Length: 242
Length: 316
Image (cartoon, rainbow over all chains, first blue to last red):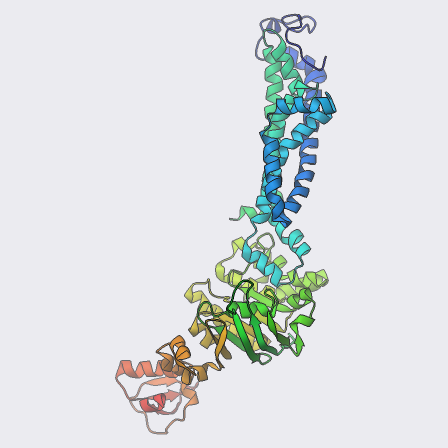
């Protein structure tokens, strides 16, 4: 498999996967024989790569956003520029961002991750700042009055109370990244985008592969959403009471 | 519980907010004796909350001084000062993400108490403020009523056994019936623990009910009168104080005294209405007016007649 995709290529109408079944010949929507045969060499590796791409992107994005949010929360002066910066990154179309980055970092996972991380910043930074600012004034006043230091107030009061918003941000960023990461296959043969591109590039559009890879991406996003929602409820039990 | 309390002295305490010409608190001087409740009351703009927050340095003094047991608040470490003073505010400000136990144990944990000691203290305090330690300990603030939250707030402020309590309109956001009950409970509690308390309210009736002494502040944060409730009602120093305490101040003053405090005449009281000795003069007068009578019989706890009081005696 090559990196850059060149349209056409003169291959067979349906990829030559050995002796094709009737289902594959008719380009059916759900050819189980193809699925069982290529789960191990195509779909499963793509799924694992997709999860890796997402985890790395959200992890790095979280770390950067958190650092920015600490500064933007503590010194309001920085909030505007930081917010504007993450807005701007988010506004760049992903394909354009790839084009900008390829001369610098090449057709690599790094390029893809830079793009994916950039998109998480917008969501994560905004939700972190909003969460930290949402702490009621009387709660802060009583914390100050009881003699909590600034650092204690942050770690014991502001951060835990911002947790629901931050976790909601992580949830949105994760689901969005799972979706955007399929575009990574534009550059590299990683993730569920790869089989989707494969399917699209077969002249007749290989429906089973498209459906399987696309379906897995959707399933992954939904699973991540449910798991994170569950984690959110477990970690912030007080939010369920209102 | 130890009954330690501190004497609090305001000495020419002044606060001028930056960019303002007028002072918010203007050369305030008064002494709150150890173990007494001093109520700061006055119209809005009187600087009562500012004066309160000067004490734990939530608002820094512009000039003058405030001393706790002789030591200037400026000579204390800020964090230690605040941890040593109980602080209760109108909207309580409980930490929503902590249980009742977590909230009440906040300051003891900051002070590095052992886990077991914190737990025991929490149980003791919840009992003290009339909550059920077993049931309520694990609850989150969102699961409590307004009155319960304020009790937790009070318990939290008392946690490290402070010698001084600052209470900023603690019952201001609570409906009148629950407020009256909380006031009664607070007074009963204070009778046991004898803290020095500075209590801010805008409600004159609450000030009269709660205060051992009342400081009336007028606009611009100037002290108009600092006296016992009785003396403020009976001898307001000027028109402002008289107006502020209200036209019914004579009746309010009657409410502060009971029949038992009067000199009774031993006359026979056949057929007269009978009232227990702990009835306030105000309620006694109300009864005489309602029943169109001139005198009543005061009875003791065992129901025996102690003597007779005439209407003129009530008003003397």
